[in-house]
Amino acid sequence: MTPAPSPRGTGWLPALVAGVILSIGLIVVGLQSSGTSASLWRPSAAASGGGDAVPASMVTLPAEATEDFGRRLIAQTAELLGPDQADPQKRYINSRLNCGSCHLGTGTDPGTLHLFETDAHYPRFSGRAGQMTDIEDRINECMQRSMNGKPLPMDSVEMMAMAAYLRGLGRQWDAMPASARKATEPPAFKMPDRRADVDAGGEVYQRRCATCHGKDGLGLLATEDKGKGYLFPPVWGPDSFNTGAGMHRVLTAARFIKARMPLGEATLSDDEAFDVAAYINAQSRPTMIGQEKDYPDLTTKPVDNAYGPYADEFPLEQHRLGPFKPIEAHYKALKDAKAKTK
Image (cartoon, rainbow, N blue to C red; front, side, top):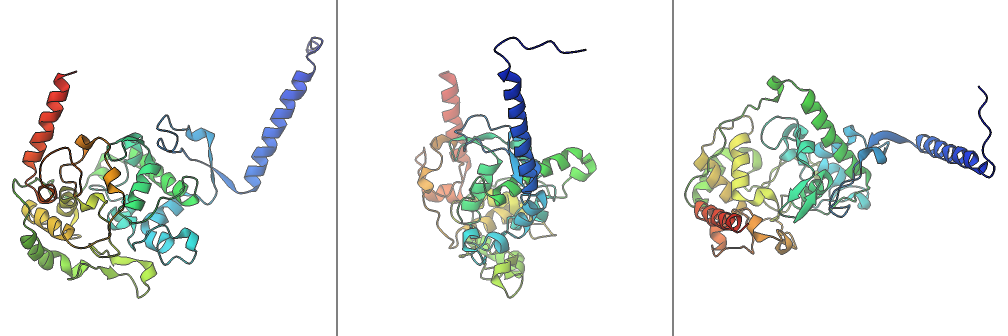
């Protein structure tokens, strides 16, 4: 069938459409020839003003930002992003820890601090940030706190690769059978109703932890080259996490220790995990600047947060060592009272 002729005065429209299509085609060809992959990246909620994240289908990743590179960044963070990196522009962390120091098996060991379900948990509201956050924001929280460094640029290859790896783990988790998801861990940590005993924790540390992490807590290097990071990470000192890290909270550290430590023989009791977490966090480590800006709503601050200010009258030492049940009861009463006024 012969198409009907265009109405007078509209002959420019097909030409315009054809031109736009041709332009888009040239752009796509140009991107492909310059090494851009078909992988997708979604900017963070915080970076986009706290609103809806840009759909992943609208942004492409550079070819270098692969999931495999993201996995390497988790496993070899110190080598690739640490203070000994040959390229000064790539020195994002001031410690020599790896993300895999806590996220065992690059996050693929089911159980405490595994990374399989990261994508399912984001975007979500962060009390610490006081706004909606995405995977990229969470990565940068770790970069600044657990790794004692600075944020990765949102459009950097490293950020895109790490986010792609975490989202890839989510797809892997969805495809795994229930048997493969099962963690081999002891019963979950139950908080003792008392103040943590730092001295008792020191005894536990020397008896059960020092073999790997060192009597001085400074870890065991993987090789003679410090830039390669640690076989067993330091748990305090200049190469460890800073005072703004989640692991600097006694209950958070105790949960991890009870579930995972000593490595391959997680047999500590609740009391031992509680006390040794307090001992480790009582030692010297880098101080994070600007912690007072955390938790704009102080009522969302965890009860074991090791730095003020707080929305209560409990002393700093009780927030650091417990007992925590009175603090929990205080915030529960605040929450209940607020609910009644609605």
